[in-house]
Length: 242
Image (tube, rainbow, N blue to C red):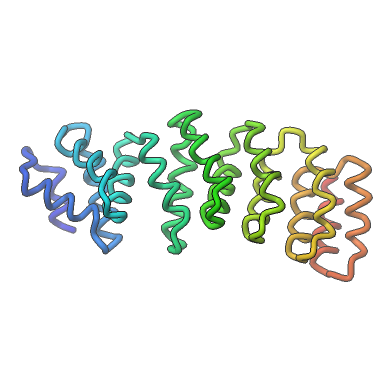
């Protein structure tokens, strides 16, 4: 770590230094990898060789090195569509910390990259990999671009086979609906879903959307009489927001 800290003060970036930095960008120790990315990103604007290393790392067949390169690109404010794709790919990893780190980076940079960047995330929100789809939906929720495409993707995912995807779709729809009142009415059928968790989450989402329509309020009033205490509570809370 001390060796990495000293790189930023060097007046020359030699090939051995670049090789060492490259190794650290792909290190199995996340603390080393993170520090290497921070150092590389901080000096990439001054050293073309380091900027080239960050670009090369993102094309590596080694997923650890690709991640390190993408993280360094973020630190250098040099994020591209290809960088974004590395993070989107990481949304499917079994590593929870890595998934949410990718989510944070996507939310930070997708809009900066532009509409093409958002479309990369949208494609993942319709992915066959349920883990990636779920996380991409949460990205769209937090990006809150205001585009009707996001609402459409969330609505389409409400009937996914995986419950976690469906719950993510509810959360995303509540944040992205272009016409909240209509979206709230459209959700009423999920108050009678076979899975009680979906029913409860639906009531909560309807509360966020604002159950101002009589149809939505009537459905929530019925849900407020449910034998499921969680659904009753969520429905009552939702009605209080209408």
